[in-house]
Length: 231
Image (cartoon, rainbow, N blue to C red; front, side, top):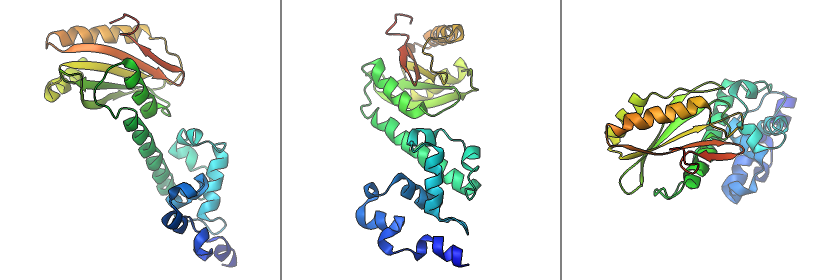
């Protein structure tokens, strides 16, 4: 019982408690471990929530990018981090990714492949598997919808043109940008990537919908079919 009182954050001076510190001094004043402690909420008999937050940072080499790559199962390998705590941490990290992705596409008018690539890199940067998504645009090249249409394994994913075109018609889109990531880091499109692009492009023609580009992103950069004259 004495050990529990020693490690419990509620026994600390108010200015040292992460939640109080955030309330009075702002989130920017907290360390990464302290922010994690707020998400973790409760420690164990042996460790405070802050101790667990510090362990998480050590496990991820004090790098938030590395922390974002940890799966729920990997987070739970730390004694004191159960399923609920791991899910809370994973959810917070995903919100951070989505905020960054949104900031990189804050202008809804698409003018270049690089603007789409920045959005995709922020959105997919920590994923260990392939994601296939589509950006739907109107006549003014403004984004009217973004949707992940397929999530695959480590080596690939499959996108059904029928699903993509059905969504395009629902959104009254007149053009599309196909998007997917390569977790391996390679930016070279595979033969399957090229065939799928052609298949979707040909199918879209029957509905007067134009495929403007197919953008592939990885940790190394991006590849644009349009920039390379492949579409």
